Amino acid sequence: MPDTIFWLIRHGETAWNTERRFQGHTDIGLNATGRQQAQLLAERLRADHRDSPFSAVFSSDLSRARDTALAIINQINLPLAQHTGLRERHYGVLSALTPEEMATQHPEDFRLWQLRQPDHILPGGESLLGFNARVLDTLAEIGEQHAGQQVVVVAHGGVLDCIYRAAMNMTLSQKREHSLHNASINRVRLGGGRFHIEQWGDIAHLETEAFDEL
Image 1 (cartoon, rainbow, N blue to C red):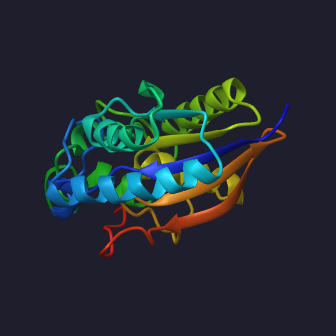
Image 2: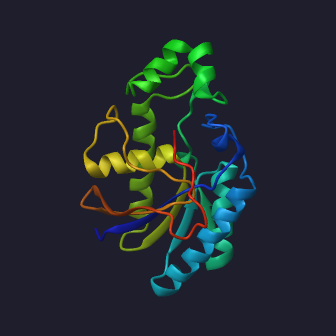
């Protein structure tokens, strides 16, 4: 099966990003900076699309990703396919909290989150193992549908993290040292059942530095 090239995008900035507040499945929209980032990103992808066309645009159904994707399709005139499998990890009881609030209100769950304990299911949410399986299955499904093509996927920091780890043979519990910037472009090739990173953390299209994931 021919390789699929994914242009993986993290959504633009939200108010909760600036507050370091965990969003998860909570549907938080873009702030003014995020909308500007989405527009700059869309203009960059319009030029890339002209040189080497994309075949499809997928996004998480959460509004921060969807609205980032809508800015893109307005520039490159492709339909948008929304997929719940591209949602951020469900943080359960840690949702809507800052790290400081988590440490006070849910100290044991916060400790295990900091340790990146793969099989710990956050109460009301997902484990890292479950989240990772969902993400990899979703990208494999999209890759099979669009073999030999280039696809834009707009999702979340945690989704990009899963793909990076799969490509680099990193365990889920290893400390993250790679970037997960808002509105960044991250190109990954899926071939032979494996992900291969071609470019990571490109934010040259933005006017200012973007927030990294927690």
